[in-house]
Length: 287
Image 1 (cartoon, helix red, strand yellow):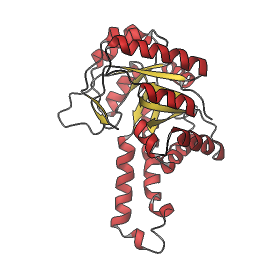
Image 2 (cartoon, helix red, strand yellow):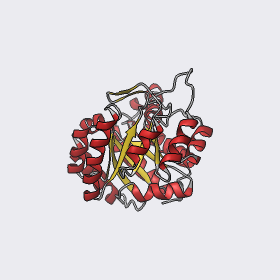
Image 3 (tube, helix red, strand yellow):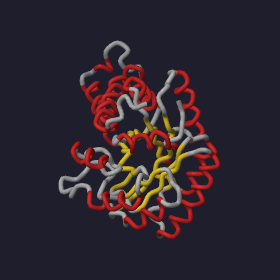
Image 4 (cartoon, helix red, strand yellow):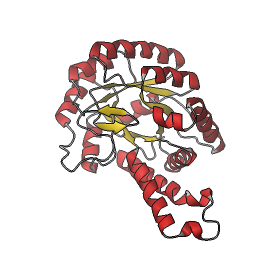
């Protein structure tokens, strides 16, 4: 059931759990996430980066695929189709394409410009009945060309953006896209607590969910994080399962080269990863 992210995140804040955003890259990814959410009776957010949108032949194609699959599979749990780390231009493309939620990543702009552009998009998304995520500070590492140094957000700047009426707020607290290095210092809970104090019940977003220890995830949720993004971990599990299938020579047995067979182990690996994360985030049974 395609909806905005607003209600599911308000419920998550009240219930002290988080909704997972799982980035999708193709049909297998989408189907795996949707089926797992339905099986676990969990709300879910399908994240689409601009790079992945381009890879899947455009945002209109993505929106049409998700809408059709949601209906064909009989999905009844709340599902939000969300632009991840959207540019100003990308946000308008996704609004036109029929997404139910967008993220405007204005973190690389001066705070005044971030506020101005976010304020404009708040007005537009409200009129369209969509949810909007904004970002302050930056997420370390690189994702689809979006590069951040990982600076912690200024809590006062977070408040100025949150007060614009955004649905959810992503704030840099030492989190990183991709694999975390061995010398990673961990999340800055001091920063997160300060942001929470100034933004009240505003749902907070934790990007770079892959590789963060379970105890840190749970502490972040206790401090107001209601949405956690996972991408790299699904990619790694998919790649590992596919590699094992090929290295075992399964693709050479019978019609093991058929894409429906070749991609099946990776599909199941994504489902297993999503299940593990939903259980950790506490969203199982919360649809």
